[in-house]
Structures are given as structure tokens and as C-alpha cells.
Amino acid sequence: MPEPELYPRSGAHNSAMPRIRPADSDTSLGGHRVTARARMAECAGHRPPRSVPRAAGEGNTVTDSLMRLHISTGDPDEAHQWLSDAYADHRVTLSGRSTAFRFTHSVADCGLLKVGVARHTMTLHGTWEPLDDIMLFSHLLTGRFTIRSPHDEVAAGPGDVFGYDPDTLMQVEWNDIKMAQVRIQRSAMERLAAEMLGDDRGSVPVGFDLARPVTAAKAVHWKRLMQYVTTDVATSPGVHGSPLVMRHVQRLVVATALATFPNSTLTGTPVPAGYASPDAVRRAVEFIEEHAGSDIDLTAVAEAAHVGPRALQRAFRRTLDITPLGYLRSVRLDRAHAELRTADPGAGATVSGIAGRWGFGHPGRFAADYRARFGRSPSETLRN
Image (cartoon, rainbow, N blue to C red):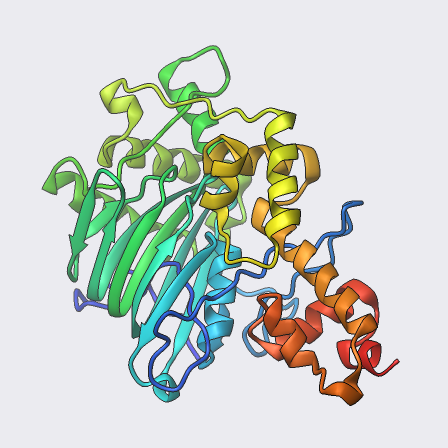
């Protein structure tokens, strides 16, 4: 199956979508919470490998194009698990015909930046945690997409381009969308921004607003640049095989993003440092341990730690090498394991019932994560 282009040469609208995630249901997922499959890690730092679906025949074969199909599924829970791993943790409700659901996501990995093509066929309402270390820019190709932060809102239709604020919680609504996305490592953008601005600090804090491009002409220029990246760059081994050329492409994309979308380098607005002390991590860990059986999210954990979500995420990575929600999932897995060891199947205890009590709504995925962590299936633990 040929890989799609983000911006077709023909001029007709192609399509692709952004980042997000749902769960299982027949017709509606009203109020269903989709838990993120964060990195599984024990307190000692064990981190089992994450499996990412590959296109058939992809393997280790060398191809001429960087664009690879990373996932194609009809399972909403699997789709949103992938999106949570790739972008940010989130909770959503879905409506529409889940039996006809389809999600695909192709990605061209250009080193410091990734260009993606996605398709999601259901109607979604949800909340996204801050993107934190990802700078994200989208081009809606088909469907309707509305996103709100505490200060801004973008209601996009086909052809619209916009950037995200990586430091705020976002409310998202969409209907049967296709979207093209560019994501850039925040640290890489801040490092390249320092070079371009001649700043001797080596890295300049950069923050973006949730907003459309500063002018219509800038929007057109951005689309043309993405056409160049997804066709001439991603499909040409002579281009993407050269580190020097790819370095130039990365700098070009970063410079264009900084000139196109409202951000702190254009307005001079300082970006908060977002530091969280070890005491904040300790408070967060205590809150998670005490409330692991409750419906808590990153915002609730950050409030308990008396810091912002972004600062807490960075502090967890710095001190524990895991995200706060990854730690929460790890604690819940431990609690489910402990309950399985003491439960009596003769009294009606089941794996699915215990898993559900600890927030694991997908039995197959719970079993896989459990085996990766404990080296046996949850049903074996319950029987023995």
C-alpha cells in the first residue's frame, strides 16, 4: 500500500490527523476514561520495551521513503494508547459507529522533528494533558477540529494551520478528521533558537500560543515547506541520508515555525522556568500512593505537589526516569498484583474484575503489561 503524502501534488485535499485517544464501546463511549499506557517501570527503574505496531513487511527493510505506517487499527483503545504514548496522556469520550472505526498514523522521522499523517473516523470530546517536551503544529485536511486552552481557542476547518501551547491543559473536540502534524523536540527547538538568535546561553526558553499563523502569507509558506519536507526530503535517500542536509532541513523548519506561529521569541514574553524540587516529587509520590485507587490525573497530582504539570513531569523524569502517570500506572499494577495473589477464585474473584478496580479497562493489554512486569500471566497468579 503506498504511503500517503501530507500535501498532495495534485492540489486536491488529502488528509491526516493529530494526536489523541479513546477506548472500547459499541456506539458511544460516554464518560469512559481511557488510561494511558505509560512506561512500565519498577521503583528501581526497570523499563520493559514498548511495542509499536509496524506496517506489514516493514521489518528492517531499507526503503526509499522515511514515511512509515506506524499503526493501522479498528480498535479505539489501541489507537488512543498509541496516541498517548506518542503525544500526551488524555481522557476522552467517543461517539459514532465504533464497528466502523478506523485509525491510521504514518510518521516520517527526520531526527529532531517528525512529520505525521493521521486519520480518525469517530467524533471525540476530550481533555489533553500538557504536551510539555513536544512542540506541535497541525494542518487540518478534512473534518472539524476545535481546541481550547485556558486563554485561547482555535476552531479549525479543512485547510487551516495552527500551533499548540505545550504548557497548558487542552479541551479538544473533533469529528471524523484527517490531519498532518509536525512535532519537534522542545529541547532541540530551544537549542536551535539560541543559535539563530545569537544567544550565548546555548538554549533559549521558547513558548508557543495556541493560535493560527501570524499572517495568511505565513500559513501558505508553512504549507509549502511541509510539502517540501514530506515529498522531496522524506522520499529522497540522497537528501535524508545526508546528516548535513538533514541538519539544514531541521534548522529551516524550526526557523519557519518561530516566524510563523505566535511565540515568546516574537513577543518577548518570558517563559516560566518550571522547576520542581525533590520535595515536590516526594509529595506527588505520596499522593499517588495514597490515591492510586481513585480517578486522578496529572493535574490533580501536580496540585497535590504544589507545582505545575510541566514542572512536575520534568522533575519526575529527572529524579525517577518516569512520568507521573507512568508512576501511577506502575503503582496500580503493583496493587492489582497484590490483590491477585490473595484473591480466591472460588469466591468469585476474576482477573478482569481486579484489573478493572485498578483502572485497567482493557483485559488483553493488562495481561501483556502484567506479564512484562512479573514474568507470568495474571490468571496464573490468581490460580496459584
